[in-house]
Structure formats: C-alpha cells, structure tokens
Image 1 (cartoon, rainbow, N blue to C red):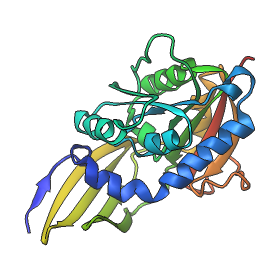
Image 2 (cartoon, rainbow, N blue to C red; image 1 turned 90 degrees about the vertical axis):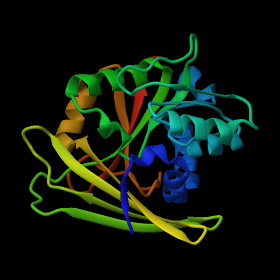
Image 3 (cartoon, rainbow, N blue to C red; image 1 turned 60 degrees about the vertical axis):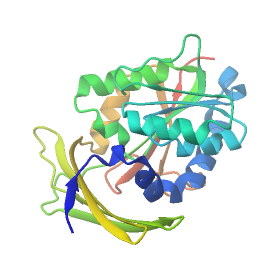
Length: 265
C-alpha cells in the first residue's frame, strides 16, 4: 500500500472524522466558560470567533446552540468544507486568514474567541505568537474571553511520543497515528508526523503529513500571556473540558486550556 505525502488539512473530511469525538464537549465547555468568566457587554454577546476553524465542526455545533459563529482558516480546502457544512444555517461568516495577521469583518466583535487542540503552536515565532494573541484580544468586546488550548512540552523527554486512535463515519474509517520527536530547546521547535490510514469503499490508502510546532512549557506560556497585558488569566483547565476541575498552570500535565479575559467593562 502506497503512502502519499499530503497535508491532512487538504483532506478535511478525514480530519473532521478523527477530531469530531470531542466536538460536543468543546462546544459545551466554550458556553460554560462564557457563562462563568465573561463580564459586561461580552456576557450578553453570543457571538464566537474560531481562530483556525478548520472544517467548521465546532462552528456548526455553536450555531445549533443559538450562537453566531465566525471563523477563519489559512487552508482553502478546509474553508470550502466549512462553507458546505454551514450553508443551510445563518448567522455565520468564514474567511481566509492566518493566526498572526488575521482581520475580522469591520465592526465585528465577539464574546468568545477560541483556538483549541494545539493549533496555536503552528505560530513559530514569539513575535508572531504575541501578535496572534493580541489580535484575538482586540476582536473581543471588553469582558470577553479567549480560550486557548495547547499541549505543553517536556523538554527533558528523550524518546518520541506516539498516539493512535480510530474513528468511523458513514462507512469511512480513519486510523490516525501521530509521532512527536523530542523538542529542541534552543529553537523551541518539535517535529510532528501524522499518518492517516483511510478505508473507504473497500479501498485502503495512507497519507502522511510532517510539520514543526513551536513548543511551550508552563513558564513560557505564562510569559506569552504576560506580553499581552490587555488579557488577564482567569482560569486554567485541561483537555477533559471539565469546568468543575480547574488546574494550576504548571508542567505537571500536558494538555492546558487557558481562559483569558479582556480587561475592561
């Protein structure tokens, strides 16, 4: 069986299938964060922006819950998939943009801006990361919240990390295998590989994507947030999406979700 070098963002259906299991939990968590932490005018604004929205799976669920839902992504295939998914609903906008330099439609502001599942780690320099976080804050109404989720890096790890999971939808089975190499502390980069094994219509094929992520320890993440003083940290959780189980921001666990509130009323 041949393996194809192909960006998994260029196959949005398969990407959507392998990440869809957490969609309901993510959407419920975002609503809960807004209810608990948003203040002022933002607490009345049920409009959410997804930074790097991908296939639009979370946007679709937020629309079902009565929100307006906007999103942007750099990948044209993902945007096309999102538009097809959302076209039967109203109160949404999607456009092409990157994390460090995105712009929102004129006059558009949000109660919640979110970027989950480590997508923020595609921003490879500190200057661009600060710019991306600052733009997220600028997109909020005062009192609105940024919800930022990413995997922290253990710089002492010597071996590779592996993860494998299987999802299926409408007769399409997708097996995802990821491999993460030890991080380079000096450059703050780690190499990641994702292999998808797709079985569809009785035919199985594989595709592979390789990229670099920017790495964060807890201290580096605190420093990033500190560089954007208009956002204050008001909550910290993990990828269980459980609002009843807040966490400390430290290096004792890998999957961190920060809740940052825009200063003001």
